[in-house]
Length: 110
Image (cartoon, helix red, strand yellow):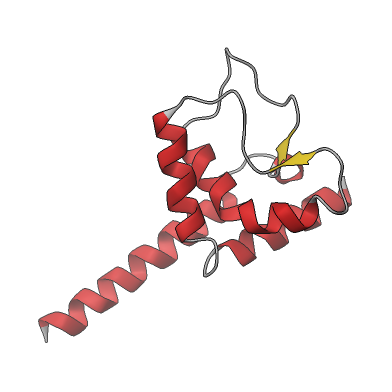
């Protein structure tokens, strides 16, 4: 009984976080990391690292078609961005496909 309840709550948390993650980027046309997008004064943090990690495998493929894309933002906030990036990489296969589709559609429409 407790195990099934835990699985249900875990599934709801994953669905909530996944849905929030897909809509967390304010401008989907800039969801992929753009070259020279960030500066030292406005460097990406943990949540940008998660987003970029989710899109990393798909960014690699997108680089064949776009010259201005990158997988990793430089400069960044350091350890927090790296931790977010690794968490995003781990979740990129089950969650990242939806984020990549949204980002690609936004990039095509811009």
